[in-house]
Image (cartoon, rainbow, N blue to C red; front, side, top):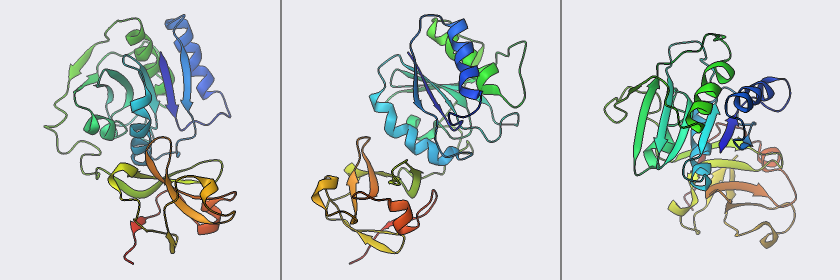
Length: 246
């Protein structure tokens, strides 16, 4: 199983081009679009979002993840095995939170290069072929990395939970990088200058009311019943969400 996680969106040819490579090089392998609307050009926000989705991935799954604003630059291409799941993509911090929360981690730099490598599309020309090779139980040329021994690696200084908005979904709900299990239900958050209190589900508050809840991926999410929290509170990706002192 190969899961796709990108900031490409569904417009344009990019997702389709990667799928052509995967289907041709790993025929018969299931390919699932996990999401293609990660916030563009923001590996840090995507890292917390990807980490919240990782526990639902079955053992042996290969996640081809591309949020890569520095494509063609100095950042290394990497493979990370975390708790039996495989992640292929740019070494720009995208897999930092996944790796940090895993019990077992093995990272490698990808040394293999294809005959054709467009500088601006490693997703198609490098990462997709590597993911296909892993799906065929083949190991591309690689070098083991000392993940924890490299304090200068991208993302090493990011907090375990990010008290920021990391994604706005199509309903206008504001997902944060905060694991809900780490927060007491009595907590009141400050978001967009508004005090936001907990409710278990949307139907527990009247239409138009702001609240926070634990979403299906275990994150603190700020929402409005039958409305848009992003519009009502003026929230965007990167905005701070903090515990409010009452």
